[in-house]
Image (tube, rainbow, N blue to C red; front, side, top):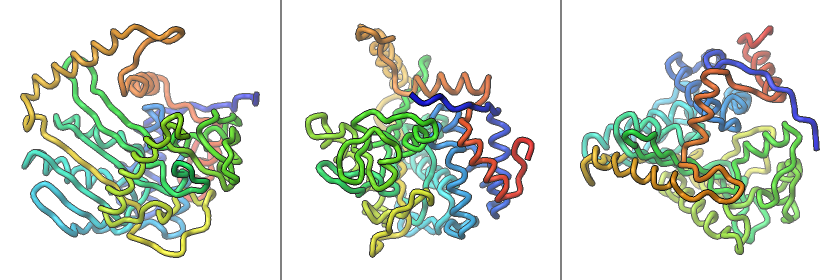
Amino acid sequence: MAEKPQTCTFSHEYLEDFTANVFVHFGIPQADARQAALVLSASDLRGIESHGVARLLAYVELLKEGLINPRPNLKILRETPSTAAIDADNGLGLVIGPRANEIAMEKAEAVGSGWVTVNHTNHFGIAGYYPLQALERDLIGWAMTNSSRMVAPLWGAERMLGTNPIAIAFPGDEEPPIVIDLATSAVAFGKIEMADRKQQELPLGWAIDKTGVETSSPAAMMEGGALLPVGSNRDRGGHKGYCLSAMVDILTGVLGGANWGPFAPQFVMRHRVAERDRTVGKGLGHFFGAMQIAGFMDPAEFKTRVDDWIRTFRATKPAPGSDGVLIPGDPERASEAERREHGIPLVMPVVEDLRQVARISGVPFEAE
């Protein structure tokens, strides 16, 4: 077993300020830069380390190469009272996502529900950030996105789909909200990167190597291998993860007018694979939804019923050797409470990436 890498701890405020200043350096307006920093910070606070500041270098590389537009002009291509289709003008996904989500929420407040597709965009952070914003307005929120091809479809031996996450959140009354945020792959690619940085092996069922054989090596996956869908193989329900991923890809890519499946553009430049010989849309695609609870029942009654649901499941008889049933969102809430008070630990490879960001941008980091 490899020795655990050393970590350094930073306050979330420090990392947010550093991140915002880096984005400003690349021409992103101050308010947008702060918004982007908040999305990344939410990921680190909630313990989803793969999508926080560990991703900053990837955004910087794309901005430096002119592959992201720092000052996009969003264009609404089609619109009804409850729907909109948006061309994001190749803007930063961490800025585009919140803008499109806002449109979905405004439509929901006006007519009961709002549904928004976005194309010509890129990585938008954790999907769970967006339904959390809907909760603040007493709405049920949804978010989905497709992503760079990293996942083999069931019985396939090459990358054809993204990790294609889905998120939805339901408000409680006295209990905290239920927040579901999951990749449709067995694991997010960022966790492969984190395992590589921490010199850890992967559980079998997460990935295959370039020959299509299951592997526990992060390097073997990254060097021509692929992630597996939720369930991994047919006997373990891999067809379900594959179908969920296909659903997200069609809603975000096909319906949204973005690239889909193997044609989705790459995000992490250091792990790029050969691009396909054609495009089938613009950039990546997102899908946002928001629903008024009052369209279905009294909001107060719904929240009381959610509380009852939560308490019933918390009272489940625990499985042997476990602490009992968790409610979706429990681990992230615990992480956020801990990290707001004690700071965000970053493994040294991530710290080194941030030092490289500082050298590229000229924005001070630590003693730089």
